[in-house]
Image 1 (cartoon, rainbow, N blue to C red):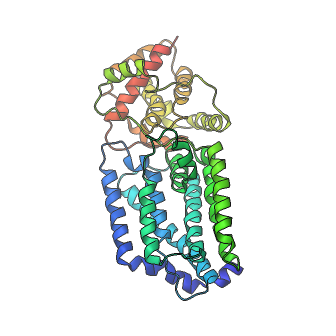
Image 2: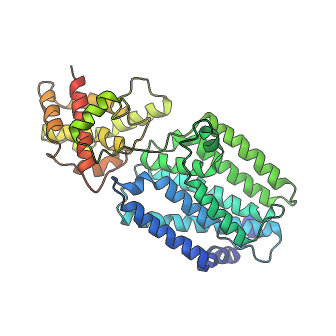
Length: 397
């Protein structure tokens, strides 16, 4: 009750809504809308899902940095900032998700995990908004807006060319924590695989809120710095799955993809290692939910085979490692269990030879299995279905 009583709901409501009228924030929101439209128009299957982590993390940063301290003591200002930033971030994330769905983003495969990742992200940025007025020599709010925009740019920096520094930079970057946690929930196996980043986000956000409650300015910088570095060490030891960087194969024929896959095992990969505990749990969940998935019991054996192949093909489009390389083994097991052995080689050969045939409607129901859906142009997913049909057909006894 102490936190609520010190930051009255009247002040919190004002702090939540007033910054929305600032020209710079309105411009930033307009930029965000244009960014959503631009990403949605990209030549990728469900591009909004592929880039959801970066988009939602950027929105959370923009929302949290748009505060206004007002005439309060530093501690009261910090607490008001926290509640206002938390509410403002939640409102804008809901708004952006609604716009993304309207622009064609598929249904979420893990709604609870995604909500948890967004909540941890909102807590982190709201915590920073709360502690900002307490930092020695903190700049004006207008400077904070500029710093926030700079952080937004840093959020999208690709450290891929800095191979030696990349793990350190990513482990220290809260923008990457937020991006990885959200992306793993949207197109990956859920938040369990990104547990360290979730804990880091919530931990630093909680420490920032605690610092805002302290009666002295001495401790916030040290408290935040120590917590930040300690939790960054946890992320270093337990990194989240890599962000998707899929080769959509839009410019390759099925035959060319098959030849590339034969030379490069990273294209349509099939795992040879044993999955870890988190991945094994995700695979078990998928296998359990296939039992009640109608497309897996389609009366037409050819369509049934194509539907099962979608379980490997769609996650491959999203480059959802380490999940994607273990799914073909599960699909092969389901094909053998659900299609007579005498028919299976011929059905796989037909799927590989004629990617243009059959329905791909089952791809939109994959969230029922805890896997990302696919919408829009079917060309890329048809090619991946044919590719996995050929690979699993070659592997059949």
